[in-house]
Image (tube, rainbow, N blue to C red; front, side, top):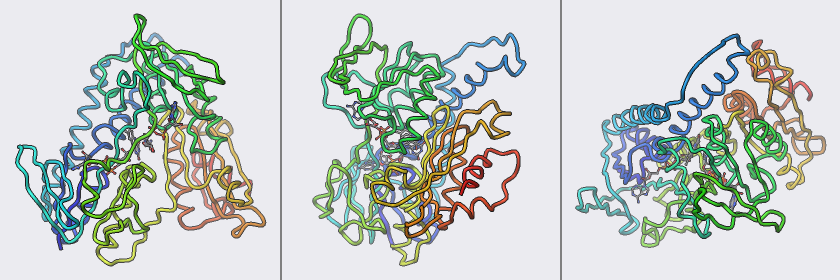
Length: 454
Ligand code: FAD
Ligand code: NAD
């Protein structure tokens, strides 16, 4: 069997390696560095910056830990070069994997010739054609740009990672995941940060309780956040960039040395010539069924290109689904339970339904909460800020007691949410969670404490 995979981001390259290990001949085509957005300009470089930011945050509290008279300067060039070293090292790892048995990597831009064959414009200027029994599209997404005057003056999430110095004043348009992660990072780097968000709350797709509390925590750190702010234009002035916005029909403006536009990402559907292969798509992505199959039975699509959750781990597990379908095997992957994290300081994380979503769906729920300030480990780490909210099916629902969602912020939330995700994927109740022995003292006890309210 031969499979063509277009795109070598986490969805594409992990699926390629898994397919090759099953004896399938794989050709993977990539028009960018292997590892895709995640490795080269997304998850990994931002998390390198997050580590620097956390280091600085800790140093700023050194005195309360008995460390006096510390003297240090932030060498921003080193921050950037460390990030590049990490990315280069991991990219070499992916390149090595793609040199494995049964895989051939073509560097170039792919587009469909028809539903069975793909043309590839190779990096050296020549063109080749490949065909396979199955084709998996994993071409990811690109930054969205607001149609406003001066949009071209703004940085994207890729460009902000290439700065040579932290700006004195940073304005971030969009309080989604990308906007808040960079706002939090650059605040720690010493920038004055203002975030402008169109919706009433930050992270509009998250549980409102979580969004409100995280906003308070970020504001307390000195990040200025304006919600219900509709950005109108960006203009270059003698005193930096002027970002004009409307709030409650009043005009207002922010002056900044750099402006980051982080208003979402769009599936990269345009370059693929999808129509010639008869593949149905919209600007929101390629439509797929539960096995990640498009309307053309031997063509699958995975990851950001499908326009669902734009998360690296989702791309990878969608790839596993597609591969199982191709091999005619049952899949254990449950794409109904997807944890996600926001690497701000403090971190936030979420899995499952929010309280608001349950209300909209008419599901009666009980919300169980607990707070980091009552957790011995959190307090001893000097990380007392944070909360956990378990959304549990209430009396009168089809499955009383079942955990439907978990929303939290506080130290290591990204790791903590995993326990609840594991239990949710097995359909566990809050009472079952509360009966699991948790080690003491651990942050995991915050989740236990919430469940004990069941
Ligand atoms: P991508 O990683 O986008 O890879 C697609 C690849 O396809 C690219 O290499 C591209 O060059 C190639 N390609 C596109 N078109 C063609 C073509 N026609 N021919 C050949 N090749 C083509 N997610 C998380 O889960 N956790 C995080 O912490 C996180 N942080 C992020 C931070 C930032 C700043 C950004 C921008 C994103 C972040 N994400 C994070 C999201 C994550 O990066 C994406 O969800 C993930 O990379 C999607 O994987 P993918 O395989 O679908 O596509
Ligand atoms: P997003 O959809 O999360 O957030 C975009 C934000 O911009 C929203 O809050 C939206 O209301 C706001 N916005 C839209 N138009 C606006 C306007 N005119 N003025 C002001 N605000 C406006 O998108 P993102 O933050 O760009 O991230 C893109 C994708 O990347 C997400 O799907 C996310 O899951 C993924 N990502 C994940 C991680 C992670 O897992 N830690 C990190 C970064 C990115």
